[in-house]
Structures are given as structure tokens and as C-alpha cells.
Image 1 (cartoon, each protein chain N blue to C red):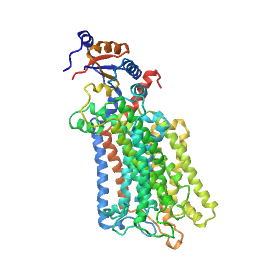
Image 2 (cartoon, helix red, strand yellow):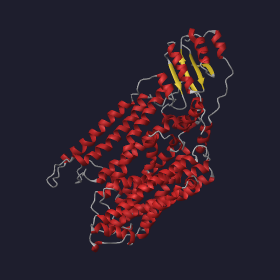
Image 3 (cartoon, rainbow over the protein chains, first blue to last red):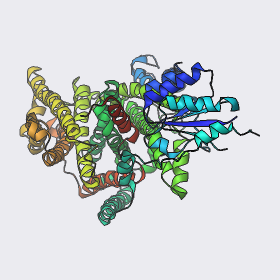
Image 4 (cartoon, rainbow over the protein chains, first blue to last red):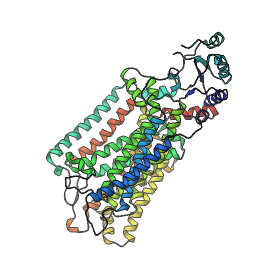
Length: 167
Length: 456
């Protein structure tokens, strides 16, 4: 199936074009934008990002480790001081707090790579360096019979350029 | 095999393509990374020389022992610990700008956050070396890391020094994650515009970034969560550093005001260092269109605000010393102002509280040369603040019979100078590898303005 690349100059035009295409039932879409714009993200997919789960799990793991580790180590080497319990919780709050942030932050980074599907790999054939300049791109893969329709649709949405992607 | 699309559609699509113009923002900011002038090489060489002399001193100190530092009873925390606290403090402005101002949606941070984060990373790396230099037997540094062991070391999690280890390693790691996540889209910009080995390195670092909606969405979330996590972290790190002092019982240290006092001081000194770094960068690379006087004025306001918090803490320390009626406390503070270290104390008060009051004048807030000079004095003042806190308290203990005098030795000064060169060296190298202004964040603002037709 052919892939059509449309180039836009404004993010709101991209968002409108995405909505149009989705309304027509074309779901094989991808956008490229030089900076984050909420309107595009909302038009593409309105579900909350899954990165939040990674942060939550990381934070919980961190707070667990931050308390479990000192408690285990205090018991592993019991030194009785002033008749107090070996493990004293109040000072361990600081360790728990720091490790919550450490693990939470690291897992958020992992989440970014997994959820955003980042990996050093070949770039999409539709991507070009103009999308890291100031242009916006929208690629859509449609059956042959719809190419002409999509083409005119995109031009009607003020695309400045519509081309077929090779390969 | 894909059959060709209908002829009419094909005909429609064959149109002369515009050659895509590169964005001016990309060109301007990436130009910083391109080419090296003679003066740049000279600066790098000078910094490398400074680092080398410090390394030689360190080698000598490691061979000879800590005796060559100015340590003698009763002062065993000297320039190394002072400089450690100084650099950790410097590191606070970066995360404040990137995390707290992000949560407050202060958009003006977009132009300066990368520079401030870079400064944070290298300041914290510089600081992290000082505990190792301070322990003398560097090869035993792993004794600091807590784990059950057979070496007869009891891991005391009730000690602020252990909290410090956790706080600082967390701070360094999370700051690195933060700057890296922010860099990903910018590295992709550099990747698209480079060739050869550079392109390969950038390709791996940016993880195939293409700016798809999925990627941006995950990226936004990540930045938000990291900002949320870093905000309490910034406030905690210098609090924990301050507890290294406040948890002990020395007069002048054992005060509850220490945590907020240190945090405010850290932000104050950090902003001064941001000015020290960014004013020359803006001037040399001609980035006036991005880092404007407006940014410097906002930073000056932060400096003014935090100088008042710091000034309040100075005043409150003296007030409590008098009001508590504790003789040790009041003697300790009397000796701060009129004892052997009076000059450091008055320098600290003048540079950190009196000089910044000039920022009440708008003319001076936007006068870049003035700000640069002021920032220099604030850096000096903040170093002396730690000097005063650490040295006056340790040298004047409870018993006058154990009082002593500490004078920094040549070895310590050589390593102190080396730390500044180390910081400068890596900051200079960073300039040539990664964009010093967050390109995509600036672009976001510019495209928004273009859309809504508002010009500032």
C-alpha cells in the first residue's frame, strides 16, 4: 500500500488533518513534529501515557528498598546502642525518600524508551531533516484507490506539500 | 509488490519541491558547537593545565599523607569540605530552573535551562570528588559505600554522612537523567545535520528520535515526572548536607535553621554561577536573541530574593545566639564577627547580603557587566560563607584549651584552583558537543508565537 507524506507549517493544521483522516477511517498514521504540541498528541491518541506506571513502580520499589536495606543491614550487624532497637525507622525515612526518587527517576527513563519505542535504528522513510527544522509531517498509508482522495483532502487542510514516500 | 497509484493522483503529486530551509534557531544554536577558535583552545588548554597541577598536588598528597593539608587539631574539616559544600550548592540552581520553574510553567526558563543543567552536572561531579580528596587514602573510598562487609565496618544509617552519600549520588544520577532526557530531541537535530562518526554517536544517543506524536507524548510525561521527583530532591540535597553540620553538637552548627538556610544559600550561589557561565557564553557566541536581558533580570530577582533569605538566616543566627543565653553559642558568634576570622565573616555578609541589594534598581538588573561582576563577588561570598561556618566552629570548640587556628595550605589552594579549572574544562567541552540552549523548547515557544501572532 502506498504511503503519502504531507507537510504542514502549523501544528493546528496537522491536528485537523489527523482528525479528518481518522474520520475517514485511515488509521495507519504517523506525525513528525519539531517540538511538542498538545493538539497533535490529542488528535493522534487521547489515552494517558503509560510512562506514569513506570514512575509509580519505580517509586514504590525505591521506598521499599530504602527501608528494607537499612533495616536488614542493621539486623545483619546488631550493635546495641542505649538500649534502642537495632533498626530505627525515623532516620531511615531519609534513605527511603532518596531511593524513591532515584528508582522512580531511573524507571521513568526506562519508561520513556519503552513507551516512546526509542532505540537506535533506521529512521522511517518518510522522515527527513526538515522535521527537525520547523516543518510538520504527517504520513498515512492507504489503499491505492484512496490515494487521490487523501491527496486532495490534505491539500484542503492546507498542506504545503503532498508526496508519495518511496520504499 | 505495491501497484502504482492511479495516474491522476501521481500526476497531482509530481510538483516541484521546495528545498526545505533549515530553521534559523537550529543554525544559530548549533553554530556554537561548530569550529574552534584559537581563544577557545587557549582556554581549554589553560583549564587543562589547572587540572594537571591539581592532579600533581593530589598525587603528592596521596603519597605524603594529609599532613600537607592545613589540618591540625582541632580543625579537621578544611578547604576540601568547604569546597565540597560550595560546589554542591552551586549545583542547585540548575535543577531549580529545570524542575521547579517547569512545574510553575515559567516559560522563560526554556532558554536558560540547558545551560543551568550543564552547570549543575559538572558542579556536582566536581563536588563529588572532594570527599575522596578529603579522606586522604583515596584507594579506600569504597569504605563510604554502605553494605554488610567483613572489614569490621559498621554501617551506621543514623549518620548524616551516610544520608549525604545517598542524597548526592541520587542527585547526580537524577540530574544526569534529566539533562539527558531534555537533550534527546536536540541530539536528533544535531544527528540530522552531521556526518560520519559524529552522526553515529548522535544516532545512538538519541535513540532513533523522530519527533513522532508517541515519542513527544512519552517525552512530555517523562519530563513532568522527573520535574515532580526532582523538586523535593533539590530541597532535600542541601538540607542533608546541612545536617552534616546541624546534627553535630558544635556551637554555631547545631541549629534547626540550617536546612532552609543552606537551601536558600545554594540557590543564591547557584544563580550567581549560572550568570557567571551564561554571560560570557552569550557574549562570545552571539546568542543575544535567545538569552535576553529579560532572562538575566529574572535571575537577578531570584538572587535578590534568596539574598534576603540568606541575610535573614545570618541575622537570625546572631539573634538566637544572643537570645538563647547559651554562653558557648554567643561566644562562638562573637568570635565569628570579631575573632581571628572576622574578615571572612564580613566578606560573607557584604558580598551575599549588602552587594545584592543593588539589584533593587532595574537599571542594574539588566546591566550585564554589572551582573557579571556581582556574580563573581557572590561566588566569592558563598565560598567564604562555608569557610566561616566550618572553620570558626571547629576552631573554637567548647574548651578554650583546645582552640586552634587553621590556615589553608598551599596544597589545598592548589586543589581548590584545580576544581574551578575542572569545572571550566568540562563546561567548555560540553559547549562543543551538545547544544547549550534547549533548541526544541525554544522552538516550541517560537512556533506558538508564530501561530498566535504575538511578539514579545
